[in-house]
Image 1 (tube, helix red, strand yellow):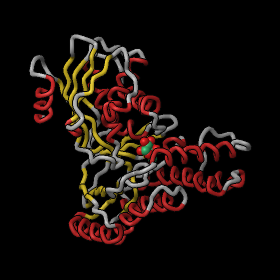
Image 2 (tube, protein in one colour):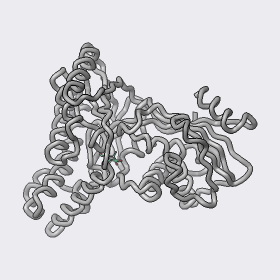
Image 3 (tube, helix red, strand yellow):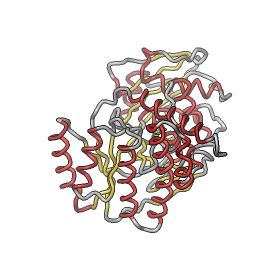
Length: 385
Ligand code: GLA
């Protein structure tokens, strides 16, 4: 935090008082590609995240600076002219939040200067974009004394991502970051937004993230294609079923009606969405009953379904997960959108070091890439510091 303040002062000067904010990254434990299908997800916030230091200005100018992109200098915009601009790169995320807040009637009475720093590994699928969106939301709320609750901020952040940035994501990432709670994961019904905190009391295990370090080329277009396939499947099922989303179906209902979906690939996508939603609810029941092995087994099944039916894993994620299974993980799966990014594993305490070494070696031998490992802690929500 001190470093961010120092950097703020270097860029914007020392006068006036500064305020600081933090928003976490997130990892999803189970329930993948279910959020935009009206299903359940089970993510948690991490202690890694994005810091922001800000100060109001007297005029209507906004200036953004990021310590993560030092070569890109200060980005400047006007409150009354907030548009997506390609050359503004990362700054479009906080700018999009300001624009969407304004559109929703939350008034910014002046400009401001803000400096960001994030310790979330870049492009790793841990939602650095939702994190910078939500840290900006916490900042706007505080700077302009806005009467807005945390869930409304979550919805506006998703809107900024969908409409300003143009990525058609569901609500999971912003929700996990906006509503996270230390040492808890959140079972969220993405249709009703009903949610429930579940304690994650790992007494003899650790949560380990492994980053494939694979660039996620074309991830957005493949993500949007999966969404379209699920919509097509829903459309076919609605010929006979009165359902609003794939999340309304259980396995039996799906199997009794899957013949309505003519395309084999589209049918597989829908199968994943329905089974994964069921699996997520089951997994949380196991966890609540203290059955961590049962939970881990469902994590493994989730990965297999994402690999074979949803086809969003790819060689790197599969190699990491299979190596994790072989090295004693209680459960291991890809997390986030897929096509690269990270895996999440639950590993017994006494195997952590050998796990990291052996999985890292296998991964390097099979892909030529170096994986990075993080033993992670579950943190709290986006807030003023
Ligand atoms: C990305 C999206 C989320 C969700 C996941 C897949 O992280 O931003 O909304 O769809 O992929 O579960």
